[in-house]
Image (cartoon, rainbow, N blue to C red):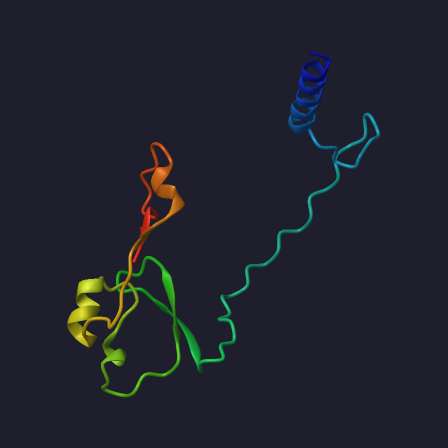
Length: 122
């Protein structure tokens, strides 16, 4: 019984410590808050260097997001016709089907009330 009560005491202390507000490092009472730092200037997106060739950032077909193209496709080749944001059926119609494909469920499949799109991967 003594072990159970000491375990409960340790668990309670751990919960209280986890809920405590972290110190901001300014322990003086009544001092004014520090002035906010100047907002950093937004930097244009720089594509990461790739060992596979030239990399460029392009807009999707509908313009809602940016995608990255790595390498330089052959002119008038199958891959030159691909665009960011295409559906899998469109890609398959342009360049053909894959040689090998597998599907597996992610751990998010078993989260109750998860309605996201990452429950399975292809």
